[in-house]
Amino acid sequence: MAQGYEEVLAPNLYFDRNFNIQAAKILPGEYYVTKREMLLVTTLGSCVSACVRDKSNGIGGMNHFMLPENAQEQGGWGASSTRYGTYAMEMLINQLLKLGARRENLEAKLFGGGAVIKNMSVTNVGERNAKFGMEYMKTEGIPVIAKDLLDIYPRKVYFFPSTGRVLVKKLRNFHNDTIANREREYSSRLVESKVEGDIELFT
Image 1: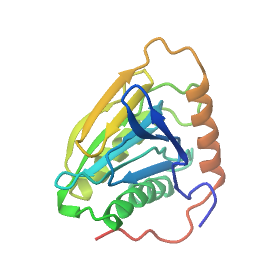
Image 2: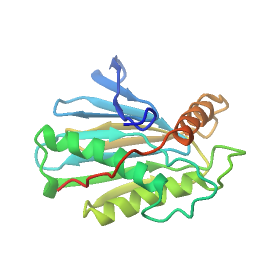
Image 3: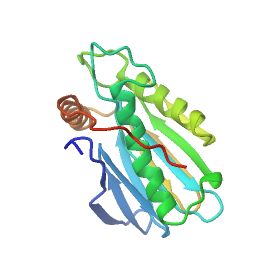
C-alpha cells in the first residue's frame, strides 16, 4: 500500500468540555468509527467528510478526504483519483461493518467541498470532491439523508454517530490559513503517491 493512500484512524482523542463528551478530531486522510456515544469533529475546506451510520444500532463514523490532483486525467469513474476516493470510502465503511453495522441500514450525510483553496492546478477541487461523494453513495445504494456541500466557506462539522445529529458551523470570518495549508499539504502527499492494485468493493 502506497504511503499517502493509507487512511488512518484518527489519533486525536480528547474530552470536549462544550458538549461534555469524549471526542475524536478528524484531520485530512483520517477516519474514525465508533459504537460508543461520542463526538466526531472535523474542519473542512475543499475536502469532503462523509458521516455514515447504521440507523438501527448507532454505529457510525466519519472520514475526511480529497481526490488527488491530476491535470492530465479526465476524471471518470475509473480514474486513479476516483479509485483513491473509493478506497477512502471503503476504509470507513468496512470498519463500520467490522464493528457490527449492517450495510442495508447505512445512511450518510456529506459535508464540505468549499471553494477555499486558491491557485491549485486543478480548478473546482471542492466541486470534484463533492460530486464524487454523492456519486459514490448513489452507486453503492447508501441514501444521503442530509448534505451541506460547495459554497465558499470552510466548515466545522460535529457528528454524533449514536443519534445521527450533526451540527455545521460555517466559518464566514475565518482569516487563519491553517485549513488551506493543511489541505495543500495533504493534496501534495496524494499527488506524489499512487494507488497500488485494484480496490475490492465491499459486499
